[in-house]
Image (cartoon, rainbow, N blue to C red; front, top):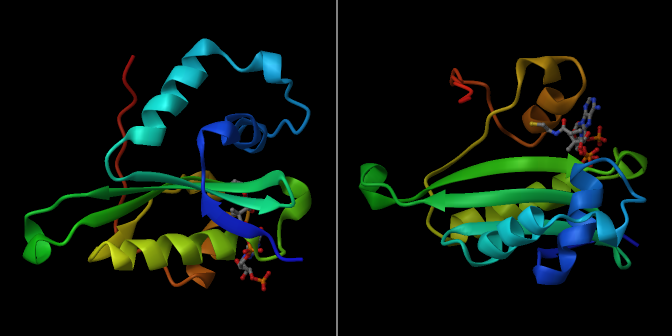
Length: 149
Ligand SMILES: CC(C)(COP(=O)(O)OP(=O)(O)OC[C@H]1O[C@@H](n2cnc3c(N)ncnc32)[C@H](O)[C@@H]1OP(=O)(O)O)[C@@H](O)C(=O)NCCC(=O)NCCS
C-alpha cells in the first residue's frame, strides 16, 4: 500500500521527530517541552503546513510548506519548502515524490506563483539535488545564508 499524505496534527509530533532526528526508537519521554511548545506554535502558524507521509500509523516522511504573502507577481504568494526528510528504509519508493506533489497542489490552490527551497551544497552528491530535479525544480537561483550566534 502506498503511504498516505496528510497535514500533520498535534499528535504527530513524536512521529515527526523520529523522522527528522533519524531515530525511529525515539521514546515519547524524550520529547522536550521546547519541542512541544514549538510544535504547538507550528500547528497554528499562519501559512505553515507540515505534511506527513504515513505507512499505516507510522510517519515515514515529512515536509513543511510556508506560504508568504507577496506584493510582487500580482500579489500571488511565494511558497517555501523546508525540512524534507524520508526515513531511510522507505527511500526510493516514491514517498518524497508524493509529499512534494501534495505541497505543489496545495501551493497552487493557495495561488502561489513559485515554490522555492534551499538545499545545502553537500547534497549535490547524495541524491537530494537529483530528487528535486526529478520533481521539476531547477537550480536557477543562488542561495545565501548567515548563521546567527
Ligand atoms: C531526498 C529524499 C527526501 C528523497 O526522498 P525519496 O522518498 O527517497 O524520493 P522518491 O523515492 O520519491 O524519489 C523520486 C525521484 O527522485 C530521484 N531520486 C531520489 N533519491 C535519489 C537518489 N538518492 N539518487 C538519485 N536520484 C534520486 C529519482 O529520480 C526518483 O525517482 P526513481 O526512484 O523513480 O528513480 C530522501 O533521500 C531523504 O530524506 N534524504 C535525506 C534528507 C535530505 O537530504 N533532505 C533534503 C535536504 S534539502
